[in-house]
Length: 131
Image 1 (tube, rainbow, N blue to C red):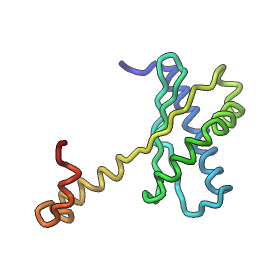
Image 2: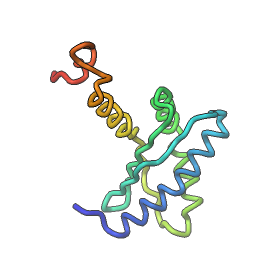
Image 3: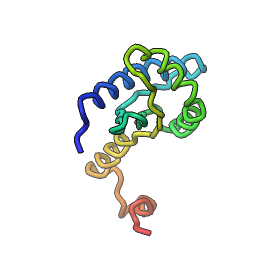
């Protein structure tokens, strides 16, 4: 089902403000050299839940940062509500996810170039085996 214009508008407002909030929180928290970008925000039809997909660089700190963001979700939601109080009546619940599509694309490119050969390195096949 395609998103309505209202859903798209709310998603773009949330995405723009989330970038500012998360990047400022990262720099205030003493995380130098960490880049947090909001790749996609999708809002449910009833506008009550927003799924936020984050791309975090470097990848080795992604899991640690996403856990910190999830624990601070009420504060982030409050900050967003303050910023969007003239545009939104109710702030949707925020669900954060790691967007690993860039890493996935990089792995595909490495395989196509022959850098990751599963025949020479059988450890790569463990990720692809069906359980």
